[in-house]
Amino acid sequence: MCFLLQLNSLDKLNKLLDACKRLGVQTSPMIIDGLGIIPLFSWYHESFDKEEDITEVFIPSLEMACKDFHACKWPEELSNRDTSLALYFDAMNEKNQDLIKEIQSECSQIITFSHFLPRQELCPEKRMLFYPNLPKIIGSDFLEVRLRSIHGAEGSASACHVFGHTHFCWDSMLDGIRYVQAPLAYPRERKRRMNGGEDWLPFCIYCDGKFADKLMACFWSEYYSTNPRTPHNTQLAPWVARFYKRR
Image (cartoon, rainbow, N blue to C red; front, side, top):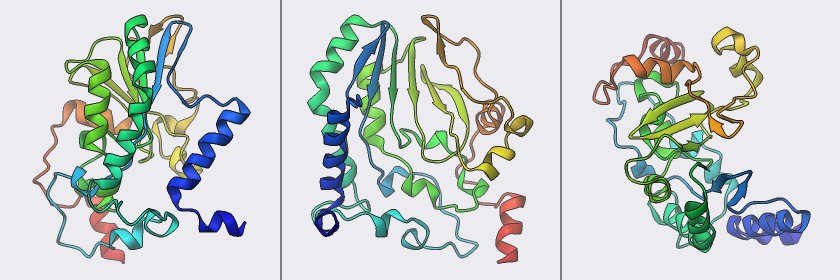
């Protein structure tokens, strides 16, 4: 236990990957029944957030709101306050380039996936969020570049990226790639879903050799399918304004 406490978070990640390998848990890209599956390493950086900040209310700092700043211990040259940590994690994908090229040559259908978000459009606007600074700790621009290098700049009907982290249900097409988040989430979050979350999981995106044709009904991706983003609008949504008024 004392030995583990002396390790930094990268050391612990490598030990976790080693343990997965010993146990036969696959963490590298592979082909399953003709479908290419490519996991991508990533970490967030603050400059991922390109939209205007909310300033009319007091918002707790990232250090106060995000446990990562206390639970993670990084080498001194790496930080999530700049792009160094995000670049480090993105570079970890290079060791799988031969496997990725093999999958690209053999598979017409590929699913990439990551924990963090590759695009800010996959998160509601700040004025909609109880923690408006959330976009600063959720995604990586380098992740989007990485997955586009796999699926192609224009995407295709057989390109899909699965992501997580924010707990917002999402299923949308952006620039030729289908982006999906189907989080288990917390019980209280599941109760707020469409139809109370009943019969929502498993979330089928691929079956019998093909991708599902129909996008699943998810509140926020449905909202943005008919309502354009207004990133320069900093007027708090009514439920957010009420939340901060009570504090």
